[in-house]
Picture 1 (cartoon, helix red, strand yellow):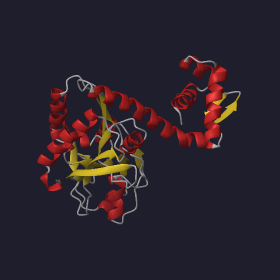
Picture 2 (cartoon, rainbow, N blue to C red):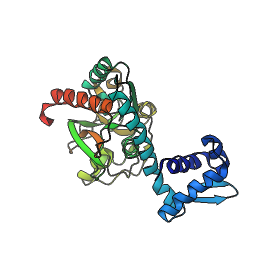
Picture 3 (tube, rainbow, N blue to C red):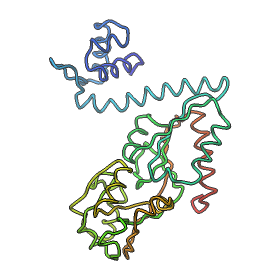
Picture 4 (tube, rainbow, N blue to C red):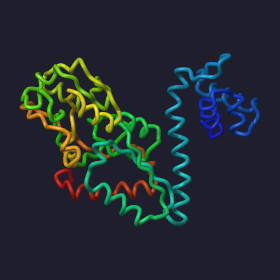
Length: 302
């Protein structure tokens, strides 16, 4: 895929029409159509469905989209990296974190140390759900991730475990089942989860799977941690929480830990990078600072 093919493909997808994409790229519509046709001939498939309502991706186009975005982002980072070799480290670094991994105690110090060493570097920190982080990592939207999900073994990603964080089941202070010791009893009440309930890579799913208990039938999925907390305070819902989150006094005052006898899986926190050696110098530097500080704090994972 040549550079102008890449730009043409992404522009048509984002604009939804050849006319709008041609204006965006400052080229003629026939030149844009030619680039798309050349790309389709190269792969031997049709990439777009054309109709009176506009242009949409075919299944082949959808499949190519992730690769195209990764190629575009890789090219941008390559340019930044080469420029940084000529002078100050001033490229942009984007990392992704999950709500649980954002609680890691060395994190703030590591980020501040990187910024102290490289004040010209632009640092972006994006909080997302674990599945979203991995998708962004595959497509090149982030340089690396610090995630709390169950590791997903695949050839494109490399996982570096850094620590375990205990999880607990929590309910509001006056929940009628706050003193139960049975997960099966709690299975009958309502639950709230930040991720899709059927996602097997989440610790919510693993909580029930490892204990041989069916998933609750009444589950609310809420990706907002703030709203989830408010719902926990005002209803008879239960949730799986990081024990680190309960170190904050305002959260500890709102929720009770249910003293379950069953095994509650810890969250394994990992730093995840692309296996391909495409991280910029700036991203590599930040990764090393974070990993070194994490290993000092959690030497058992060194």
